[in-house]
Image 1 (cartoon, rainbow, N blue to C red):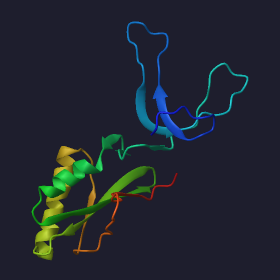
Image 2: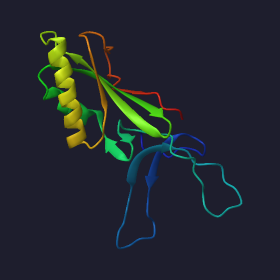
Image 3: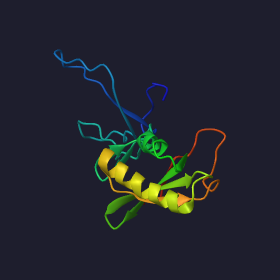
Length: 158
């Protein structure tokens, strides 16, 4: 984000500024939420559209805030799994679900990798606080990128 004030209707980051509080001056509070101001009406207060995304890679899953780097840290602690992974978000009914697709190391047997996947699921539940499905894949199956890796695949309806 550039920090430039955008015209009405443009998608940008929601920033709060307090102009009247003297005891607690909030110069700029960046929320990292993406939204837009709606055109002015006869109302005295400005309205904004609902939050449509984030500027960072934080995921809100069933009320728990998590970052892909937290999952990556737990994967790196598991010897049979490689650091190549993707988080797949879906929604079944009213609940969000997350599946971690991770590659096994080339020297790990499929049985060792499945055991490591169960261990990773337990670590994620105990450390981050969300239940996830783990899909252990063969080496080289998760897409690679020359630029920024696409760590999150969000298949939830908007």
